[in-house]
Image 1 (spheres, rainbow, N blue to C red):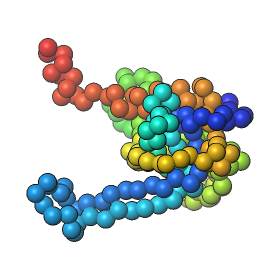
Image 2 (cartoon, one colour):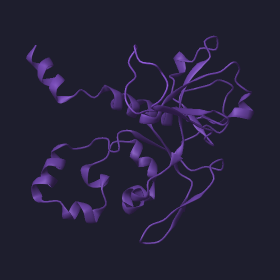
Image 3 (spheres, rainbow, N blue to C red):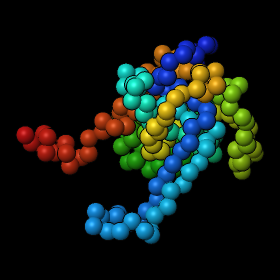
Image 4 (cartoon, rainbow, N blue to C red):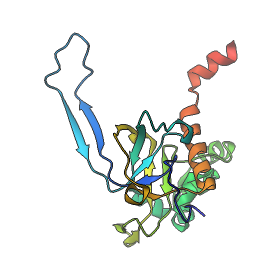
Length: 212
């Protein structure tokens, strides 16, 4: 089960909300403290149909009233080229074997050395910054256009790179703003994948850490 049958009245990590504004600052270059803030930047303001709470449950403070969100967006066309993923896109949320991460025709085109390199990595996450939300009655369907034919779906996803902060004075009642609540298992999968995404150690750091 991906969602709870009845969402509770608390805001939780992974919840799907309506009515949240998304903002994205865009700058031409970094603005130093001694520079005048005039040109070279703009702020995109959007009202996504649905947003996901990515603040940990234990850090959602009713007094502070600050949460981190990320918008739900449409999935990538290329996912449907891979039969393993097309059967259930939420498989992207969990560890996979190297062969499962790409379409069979792509795997067959890899030279032996590349195949062995990938096989040596064994089971692991793919599409590290993405987490798929299971299709449900709340999400509108949209069309994925492919050479092999169009696919209609209402899977959506979040991208960990798209996280932003929202301050609010009061949150509407759950029936107005909170649409869906992840099951304990699905929330654990989101937590595990996001933790992995942020906990990766770069190669240069590993070298220095191993040398200590």
